Image 1 (cartoon, rainbow, N blue to C red):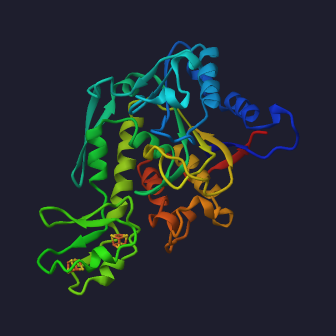
Image 2: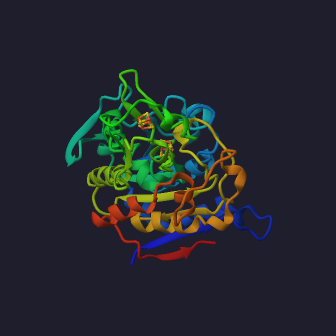
Image 3: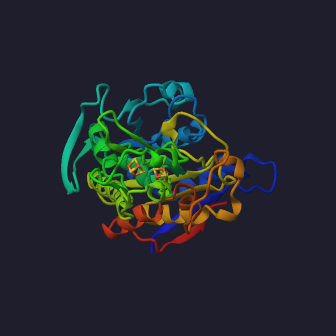
Length: 359
Ligand code: SF4
Ligand code: SF4
């Protein structure tokens, strides 16, 4: 049964060793991944964020990872889809003492193409520097995500270890609403009925939905006097299937056991870090979880985010909750467990795990 290591933010005194950095040091020692890095190149894949976002993983923790890799004889480098303004949030080569690289190269043209075949998603362009690394530490900040409910280890790989083309193809799988142009009278009731700025008519007259904002509330469906819009509820799940497929291809470039996943459950915000903004946390900080098994880790993280702990200031004012079984599903109207189930179905891990607390 896979093991998930867990360090809680809870503390009992004023000794730094009893706070999260102290616990993280012991978690890294217990994780055992350092034994695999001697003499090898190690990609530390993180989301360095954008713009004025300030709730990505603190550079203090990132440096603990790179120091640990170096102490064990490995050659670390930090990488993300783009690290253009990473320095503004403290992710600098001078701090870490190792390179900070765009994973597809400066021009975004360094990648290895793999083929998949899923509803128009056909290219997994694995980032060159990820593909060439011998070991990967998948260092993810957990948060909500408009397109899939939850962003963690799977999203950090699927959206961050590939080219723009692959990301576009995965986003192309988003859906849920089906519009019949032959029935539509262009009355605009669906547009005025949407409280989420999620729909519009394009200049060429096509009904267009921005699924990141869309909560699948069906107000547009109900507002339409011509029954021109229907809900195909399976469709929004395709995005998560695409993410899982992509993750499988990226992980397949590493030998078994050469990827270690670490999720930070701190500053769990409404939106993904790619928005370049930070908002108040949705729930109090939880801690850090880590595992060799991505399914076990993601399952443990989702299980730790509890609805009863919701901090209302973390939601946009006036946000309307939707039906669902998990807090993030109620917030974003997308069941976040779908990506986990797909990963498990592809043989990438098990949601039957043991949780081992590192004090
Ligand atoms: S389902 Fe709801 S959020 Fe989505 S486009 Fe229709 S009215 Fe807007
Ligand atoms: S409400 Fe229905 S008929 Fe009116 S514009 Fe929207 S889709 Fe077309």
